[in-house]
Image 1 (cartoon, rainbow, N blue to C red):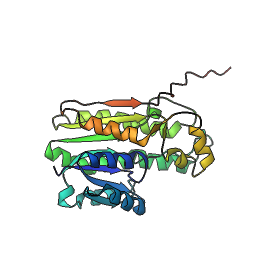
Image 2: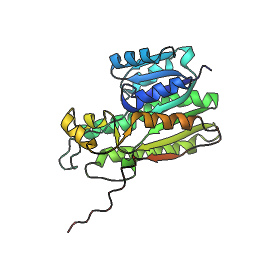
Image 3: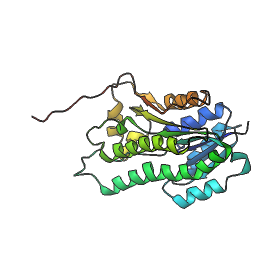
Image 4: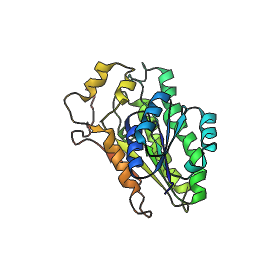
Length: 249
């Protein structure tokens, strides 16, 4: 069908799993990430699916815009965009946290998502069809200690997704903000800057979501009739619920 799915942050986790799921669904695949070796490995695993690699950081506005402008003809009909690239860094309180970490999260989770969306949206608008999946988080809905700037960036993603829908009415483009809870990917390893013990402790003794769960949700949403738009989808592991209010005494 020569339709293409474009996945950012495709070198691991939700992005890698989404690329595999959408390849199985028959899409050509564009994978974007910073680690070329992992992109090449994934492209090889996706064969015989046609795959185009973009080695870039979503924070690099010029690189993103240029890469989309220069897409080969067979990859230009982008029907699905998965804005997955994002991260959390640290879990310290605001007073003790690194301002550099704050800026990296803002530049990646907010500005990077905006750059990719702005680059791809004209394609979808011209063809009067498309589906944008923004990977948010339950952290954008519910606060927790140390969630501060990460949660704020995901709240931005949620509100931007809603406002984007207003701006694109009449184009047949759909937008869904997917809000996962606890999921075992490289997320915690990145958050704790390579500290495997801290990362594993997050998942110890509980059952969590995995990347394939989110990839399946994306695949299933994309198969819904074109007149159906799922605005937001919050998904947690069955073992995870809300922590409730804290009281200072």
